Image (tube, rainbow, N blue to C red; front, top):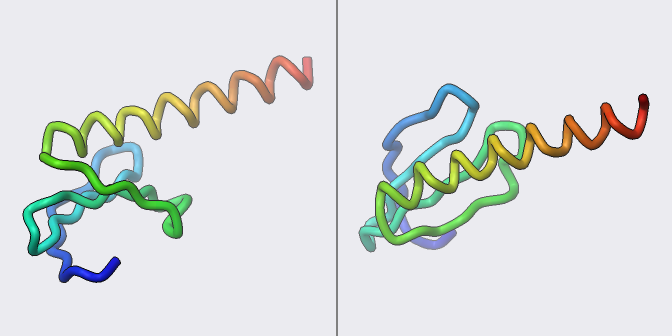
Length: 68
């Protein structure tokens, strides 16, 4: 990632938020630690976390529909 990171917090869905020394935020998920997104501000970080959760719910719904 290059820049030094400071831990900001974790959401209830396993999303991890860090802040770079540049002021940007880095967002990842504990189930996919190799994937990360850089965003401009904290609000965008939480929106990205929400997107992770929506993607996880949608993939679960698609799997249930395929099995059913």
